[in-house]
Length: 565
Image (cartoon, rainbow, N blue to C red; front, top):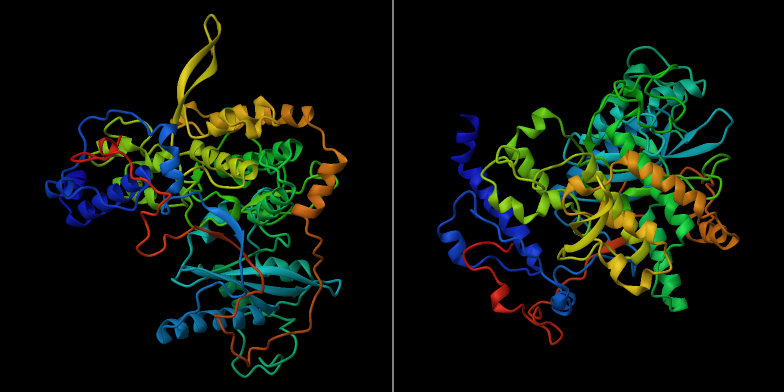
C-alpha cells in the first residue's frame, strides 16, 4: 500500500521526472531536456526495455568540445575572496547571528575565534584555538550548520577513533584532558569570573556550556589538518607537470600505492567502525586512534555507511609519524554531510533511494546513482530485481576512492559524460585463469600510453574498482592484499620523499597569533581566508554553447521517445 501511495504521489512523480531528466542529460553530455514527446506521456518506469550500448570513443572529440559536462579541473583561485558575498540582508543577518552565537559559545568553552575558513550553501567552517596544558595554543575547526542540524554530527559519533577519518572533538574531553576546572551547572547571568570582552577565553567553563556545545547538532568541532586537502596537492602536481611538460601520471607509483592504502582504510572504517567491533581495551568515543581492520567472520558489526561524496576535496592530508606513515602522510576522509547508513530500512525506502541519486559531485558519482538501468525502475530497483541502479553499499565507496586515485594520476575527475567501455578482465575459473567481459569507467588508464609508466597491476586494480557493475569491483579485503604487495614492490625513493615535502607537506607550521577577536565585536561571514583552492567547473559562455569547436552528436544518437541507453 505504501508503494502504491508513493506511485500516486504527484511530488514523487515530479522528483522521479526531474532526476531522470537530469541524469539522462548528463549521460549524453548535453545541457538539454529530452524531447518534449518523452514528457507528454510520462510514465513510470520510463523505459520497458534497455538496449545497453554506450557512447564510443569516436564521439570523444564532440564530448570534449562540450562546455557543460567537461571534467572538473582543480585550479588555483585567481583572486582573494572567490566565495560569492551574501548580498541578501535577511540571509546575511541570519548567517551572521548563527556564526557569532557559535563563536560566543566556543569562547565560553575555552576557545578563541581566529578566522573564517570556508562557506557553502549549508555551512561554514571557522578556525578556533584552544590553550593546551603546556601553554601552547592548538588549532581546531568548527563546522557550523546554517540550516540546522548536520548529519555529520551523528555519523562522526559512529566513526569515532577511526584513524583514517577526520575526527570530531569533544569540548568537555578537551577541557578535562588539559586539567581545566569545570564548574557545575549553568553559568550565572551575573558571573563576574570572565566577562565576555576579556582578552582570553574562559579557562573555567561551566558544565552546561560544554554540554550545549557538544550536543548542538548544528555545531561540529573537529581536528584541524594544516596541510589542507588532496585537491591542493593535485593542483601543485598539475602545475609541476605543466612546467616540466609531463603528460603522464601526476603522482609517482610509490606514493599512489600508499595513498590507495589510506583510502581503503577509510572505506573499511565506514563499513566496520572501530568502536563497534569486538576488541579488548577501552572503547570510549574519545581516545587513541584505532587503525581500521576487517574483523574475523562471525565477529563483525557491519554498519555499511556510504559516503556518497568522496573526492579529492574531502580527503585531507595528515602528518607523518614514526610507523607506517613515516614516508607518506596519513590521508583522512572528511565531510559526512551526505553519508547514509544503507540498512534494511534505507533499502526499503524508495524515495531515499531516488534522492541519493543527487548526492556527490560530477566526475565522482557512482554508476549506482546515474546508470541508465534506472529508467527501467518503477519505484524501488531492489523490488524490480534490477542490477546496478540503487545498489548502494561498501562497493560504492570503493568506486569513489578509485575516482580519487584516477584524479591523482590524471589530474582531473573521471570523464563526463561517463563512457563505460567493455574490457576483457582476467578472472579465476574452474579450469584456471579465464577472461570475462566487463564495463569499466577507467579504461583510459589502460588505453592511453601516457600512463604506461605505472605498473599494469596498479592500473588494472583502479580500472576494476571503476567497474560499472558493483559486483565486479574488489572489496576492501581484496584491495588490502593487492595494495600491501604493491607497497612492498614499490619502495619510496629520495625523489618521492622530496615530492612529499613540497607537494603534500607544504611546510606550514602552526604559529599562534595574538587574539584577533573578542565577543564584543561582530564577525563578518563574508570575510574568507586569503588564498583558497577551489574545484572549478568551466562554465558555458552565454549563448555560445555551440561553439566552433563543438559539434552536435549525430541525430541517430539522440533519444526521441525513450532516454538514452
